[in-house]
Amino acid sequence: MATFTKLCVTLSIISLLACCTNAQLINNFYATTCPSLQTTVRNTMTSAIRNESRIGASILRLFFHDCFVNGCDGSILLDDTATFTGEKNAAPNKNTVRGFEVIDAIKTSVEASCNATVSCADILALAARDGVFLLGGPSWIVPLGRRDARTASQSDANSQIPGPTSDLSTLTTMFQNKGLTLNDLTVLSGAHTIGQGECRFFRTRIYNETNIDPNFATLRKTTCPVSGGDTNLAPLDTLTPTTFDNNYYKDLVAKKGLFHSDQVLFNNGSQDSLVTRYSTNSATFFNDFAAAMIKLSRISPLTGTNGEIRKNCRLVN
Image (cartoon, rainbow, N blue to C red; front, side, top):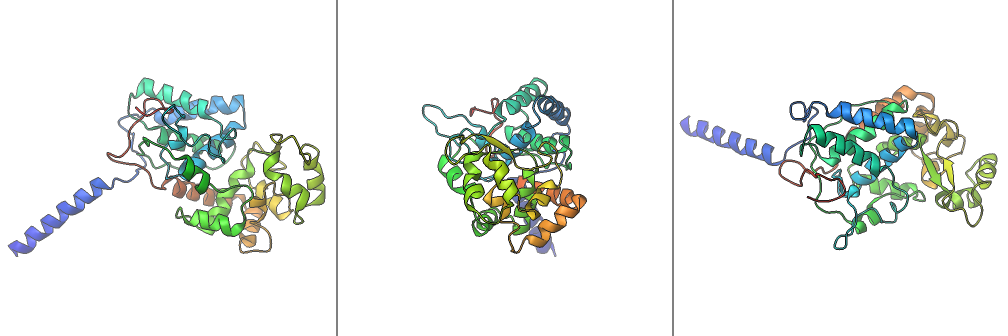
């Protein structure tokens, strides 16, 4: 009996050590160390969106591109230096990812009240949530406790982020590689209910594809010529591009998806029924989107003693 008791104690200690070594994200991580965090993030995001409503979509995209490259670790925020090449100038990010100044502003405010306490990765996760909510979308409790990466990978950014011309099989594989399902892909693509897309990313679709509403294609051609105008913008959602709602899915049903990677979700395939459901039930979309965002935010975070708490989101300490 004594031997059994010692064994149980030993196993308990081993389990405790394992738990501490593999620290998990928790909902109230900064409850005592930085109780003003969530208010600070919300206030700064409110000001930023009041100044430019598109920034909510930009921050959401920034978070997505961060998480898809080696986890939600703030690596996308790092600037290139003479001796370091980060992710900002990778093909999916160069001249298109936006919102870095907003994250800088939040970090400055947070540092003023909670010095060297909150990671840039957590700030980005909270800012993405607040951007969605402030534009009319759902809210959710963001699990926290991420630490910041000390490095980044341009090559991984080039290979791991899905693109606007990707087909369904490619998208499925890339999401599965991150532990996300085909249904997660469909609901997270609903983020395209806000924001804008550049002509160079949808030119082939409006000129060459057949599963597209002809009037929609004609409209988009007015600002996206066959050549030139690569950076001209068009709304991802035809009706309410600055409101987070389910109109994105209504567009897909009407064959008005702006990107090829959007319309493949509704093209006589496995996701047609889910797209139809979301197009007619915004509450279901909101609930599923919030759950999928929490799942996305848990991709390979750095926790415990891994990584660091950056003082400047653009530079390692």
